[in-house]
Each structure stands twice: as C-alpha cells, then as structure tokens.
Image (tube, rainbow, N blue to C red):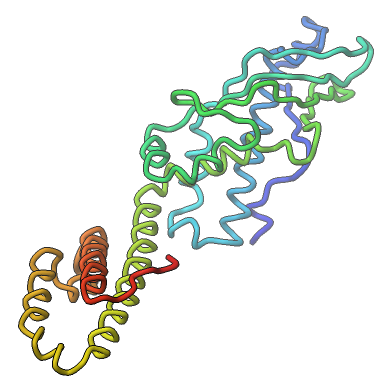
Length: 279
C-alpha cells in the first residue's frame, strides 16, 4: 500500500518527448532554456508531493483527517517562479550545467492569516536563506545542476548539497499550513487553555494554603471580605466552572482563567503571600 503513494527519490528526469525536435532546433543546452526551467520546477514540486505522501502515511494525525489529495492539489496550485537564471562556466561538449537562479513560491491568500497568527511558523516557510516579500517567499542565488541524458530529451536535476531541497520543504509546509489554518488555531488555543488552567490551579492552591495559614481570628474577621472578593472575581472574570466547560468557546475559557489568575495573584499579595512563579 505504501509503495502506491511514494514517488521515486533522487534526480527527477524531465522528459521532452512532447517536443522531440526541440534540441535539434536549439542545440545549446543552458539553464535558462524553457525545458530546463520546467525540469527544475517539476523537481521541486515532485519532492514536495513525495514528502506529503510519505508524511501522510507515517503521521496521518498531522493532516487532521483531510484526504491526501487535498494537500497534493494545494501543492500543485502554488506557483514556482524562476528568475535571473544563470548558466555558470561549462565546457560546451559537457552534458552537465551548473546553474543559479532566484526561485520564488507564491503564497496562498489563506496563508497570510497563518503567518500573522502564528509567527513561529515563518521559519518553516522561509527555510534556508529565504525571504518573505509581499505574497512570495524567495531564495536568491539558488544553486543546482542539470544533466542532459544521452537521448538529448531528458534532463536530470540535482542539488549541489543533499540539504539544498529547502524550496521543496517550504512548499510542503505551505501546503499544510494553508489547508490547516482553522485546525492550527484550535490546537494553539487548546495549548493556551491548558497553560492558563495550570497557572490558575497553582495560584488558587497558593491562595488556599495562605488562607488556611492565617490565624483563626484573622480568618474570622475577614470572612465577609473574602466572600465579597470571591463574588467580585466571578462578576469580573466569569465563573471558573465555565472555564472548565467544553461547551464554552476556547478563547472565552482562556480569558476567564487569565482574569481569575490575575485577581487571585492580587489577592495573595494583599494577604501578604508570594506570587512569584516560574511560568
């Protein structure tokens, strides 16, 4: 089953069978030729799709139950733009060309909100020396090599170093992020909720221990005041039971915990306790 999804690894061959006479009419093999550029674009896209397929099989949970084809379609929709393509020094009779180009991936519109909400995802998009410029992520002076097969129709694309496939890696991440914006936001809110709940639990326990440590006479004299404070905290922040309820929106629950924590910290300070924490 796995073999059904995986693409062949290594250098991708770009076939020119549809333009059999092209090399005859344009004998000079250069990096900027239309077929050469198409070969690089196909290599980048193929590597990204291959990683999508492999990851889908090994870590399906990261795809949020969506079909693999949706991610493949998204990867195929993203434009790969090549500019300033340069052929470095070479021997005319040699079939290998060392190339350099500026390569850009056009960012989908839905990805803009992802980068705004999750700035930590930006390094996963601008891998290597990439720069996000307007609606593109761009790499300047991207180096690679082209090899012309004996049949004069196939072009093999290889990177100068094994780790130079960061453009494909970026395309892989862009495809996932663009489709999973809502799920990523929900996951992020769930993490924030857990953190706020833990912080509140710690400070609430701190307050309870502090209250119990006070002399009986002090607690008795402050009982009405303490009850009034609890009511005020509920009015300002919301019920702590609502913060624990799964029927309440995540952001509302986070806000309740955060407000409750702040007021509880203030109360601990008022009663002479320590609110210092390592979180």
